[in-house]
Length: 262
Image 1 (cartoon, one colour):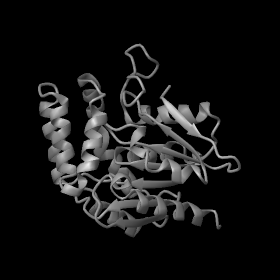
Image 2: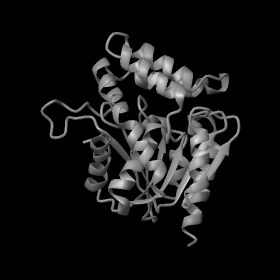
Image 3: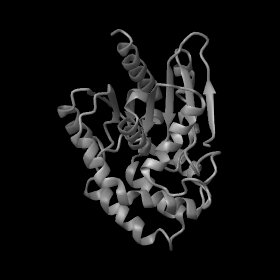
């Protein structure tokens, strides 16, 4: 099972589950925990092979790295903790996993808060993936990861996010990086399906105004999906919860509070 940590609230029965992105770990939420645990039960976890979660062994029950398999890892944790329903907060690739969980188990998802959401790959991001496919087995994965991190988070004010993800990615192994990278083979049809379906779950996208790879697609989604809202954070790039944590926390908690008013 995945490594996880819970913070129990003395009176609240609601849960908020945080899902990090590829190469990160639960530690990227350190600027969110205090704000959220004051009102909710909080669950943070490390995806397989990340942080303190071990890679899946060849003889394990579900060794294949697919979006459904990695999503099921998260479901296994909330099942074990007997969490019947949760709000979910994700960043980057974590938003894909949350959206996939909502598709596979819609009754388990109270709402979704999607930071730095990935819902479409533009030409530049698809080119990055093609380069990764070509070089993933011959180039040290940290060189590739640092290159990807710089392309996604290029500005000076993105440096903290960039360094944080690079530091966490150093905990991975080359083979583990390749396993995760193979997920890109199924990403385009999955994202296309997500864009086409207006899922009936309240969703808040929190995007940095400088998240040039992914923000344009989110604007289009919000324009057509009736249960979706968008908050664009100024002076922020892809990892908005790290670069502008106070704005991210305030916007997210206001969104959750508005749901409780109905």
